[in-house]
Length: 238
Ligand SMILES: [Zn+2]
Image 1 (tube, rainbow, N blue to C red):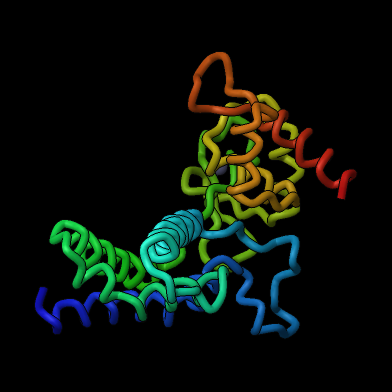
Image 2 (image 1 turned 180 degrees about the vertical axis):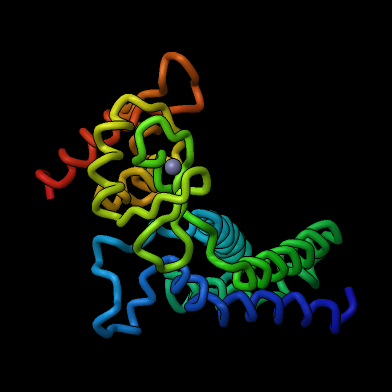
């Protein structure tokens, strides 16, 4: 393995380490540093960027896997921290174990992973934040679906043009969607619109542990009412 190629892989990983705070900022959709009178209240923040949180989870899983390999195969490597992004930094600095070992496949896999993650991180940070699904239009008989763009606190229906504030949408949504079937991503959005913040990871745990059951009608979908009940219970427990 060429030294320069190996160093490029290290630099790819270090670039991800450097970009980590920017990724984390994407998970705090209020832009909490701005403040000011026109700043939306905490309850009206859009939910987190699912794409970014998935990517961060993927990178963290890989960093842990590489760290485990280093712990098993070397006697002198310890990560500075078990937390991201420090963990990835510690892994990156020991790149030679992967790029200059006996196994060429390991080396090329390492290069590919580093390159691919760096590319995905750059793409994720380039993308404007996606519009959030906010439920059906509050106008009776209208079939429009409401979306919230960026940090706005009101929505305009693409079908009828009605402008509705978050509070109005929230009241309407609860009545309209109690029995609706949704994907996990839609659930996070719907719960948020109802004023309840549930992290995607928490939802995953509910599903894994069988607390949130799949809808009988469609195994990919869940009932909002069930998730609401679990979220309310979680509040009481906390
Ligand atoms: Zn409408």
